[in-house]
Image 1 (cartoon, rainbow, N blue to C red):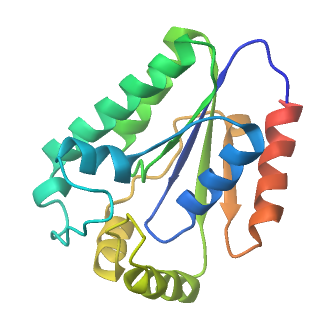
Image 2 (image 1 turned 60 degrees about the vertical axis):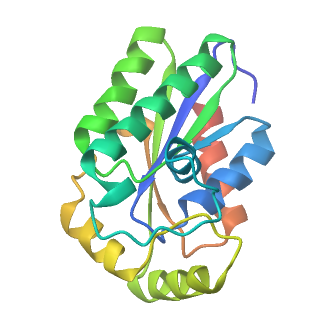
Length: 189
């Protein structure tokens, strides 16, 4: 994929829908950095990424204030990469429209192309993934079923971006199939 300008790729979706799995695969394929809300949040809280914080919905390091701080830091890091000419991936739920507006504004200000990739999958698959995640000691995500259900009820639909820049992916499909669909859209745009 050759472009004169860097691009900003934002993964958005509920916990357990495969955002981080896809961001890692896409980042390897394109050789670009990922800025993950899970890692940034825990760094801001001065805790190791592997340490679990089972706060309630919008409590502790998941409060609205701390979440805003996390998104601002992600955007700051993203902006630094983009200004250096490097495309970048942002990995977070982006469940609130005002967080997505921040990336839209940044892309507009920098004159770069933005893609928002929205992930979703079958509820049975989400439950399965979240159970596996709970058992995985290496997982950095604190997402679990009760967080998923609250996020689902609180997620603001993504309708503030042009259709050609909004990629909706069913992540029950294999990772390589999802990555190919993303690459087709990135290359043909």
